[in-house]
Amino acid sequence: MASDPKLVPQTGPLSAEANQAAALAAFGGVLTVDLDALVANWRKLEKTAVPAECSAVIKANAYGCGADPVARALSKAGCKTFFVATIEEARVVRAAVAEPTIYVLGGYFQNTGDHYAAINCRPVIGDLNELAEWDVFCRRTGWSGGVAIHVDTGMNRLGLTLQEAQAIIPRINAGDHGITLVMSHLVSAEQLNSPVNARQLAAFRGIASEFTGVPASLANSSGIFLGAPFQFDLVRPGAALYGVNPTPEADNPMQPVVDVKARIVQTRNVERGETVGYGGTWTARRPTRLAIIAAGYADGYFRAASANDGTRGAEVMVAGKRCPVAGRVSMDLIAIDVTDLAPNAARRGHMVTLLGDGITVDELAHHFGTIGYEVLTSLGHRYARLYKGGNAELPVEKLATEQPAAR
Image 1: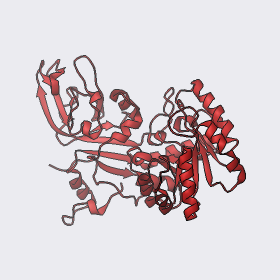
Image 2: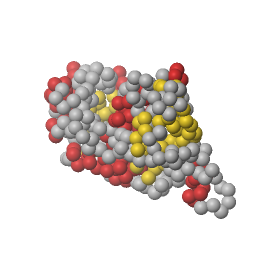
Image 3: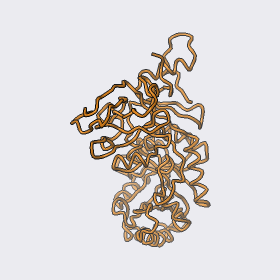
Image 4: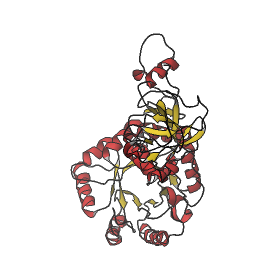
């Protein structure tokens, strides 16, 4: 596990393991990112898309996994192109990796050109006004760092219309145009039989063919699995890198990347007929043993995962067995029913698994009433964060270990 010595309490000649255990005592939970699994997912996507280049979308702090360590691990594995949402995100990535190309999906605004040039990254432009402003900056400064053009083929969100894209074809034909990528974004790639996919493919193929000599990109994570016609010159996986299923109509081809554990802060017994949690919505149907966990919706464990007398909520893994949530998830705490475990299997200080050990990000998303993307990007900052695998020199955001400190 990677560690940062500055975060280790320096309290004398203790072993690294003892220092890590002491550091963990300050945190209620541990979020572990498996960088080897992340890299394996990228390589699987790369292999699926051959001969297209496989980039990596690492916006939103690499979907909550940490842009710095993720960028380092993927760059070391051979990833040469990254996509982020903002210039600030690009700065983090550029500080981590010097060589790869970085595209900023959020586009270009006046007076931001110097920021792009300072870190050698490229805006993704989806508006003719943006393009004109970018051209002014390039003429004024002599900057020639390149730009991507986003064409809207059906999302109706960002991007030039097909007519606007057609209008800049003379620029392509004139040469020295500075456009290094033409791209669009799929609406329903996770739905294999959606007719929208074919319509978007036809529209994009038509306009991309006129961007002579410019690499083209259409496929996101799910789009890669639509087959070679969708892959063009470069694919842009995001959520699949982090373990979210890109093929929800079939088994998940990706390895899990994120594991979240939280500490039991108390165990207690309640009698049959007593209620648990806010609102008293869950009633014990038998003498029940509860474990109270130091995590809640402030940590990204959504309130929608609550249980009540008519609805079973999410489950937590304790000592290798699934245990159901009891009552409402609150800001900082979750109650779980551990009655069926051995007497000493769930004790104060033990760690339980909220995500991992068979509880997938897509399963949590189902209980949360959302998608895996939101689950990952909502994981809170109160967890200690650890990275395993990848580059042993990686920094960590906070230091901890999965074993509880002695009490």
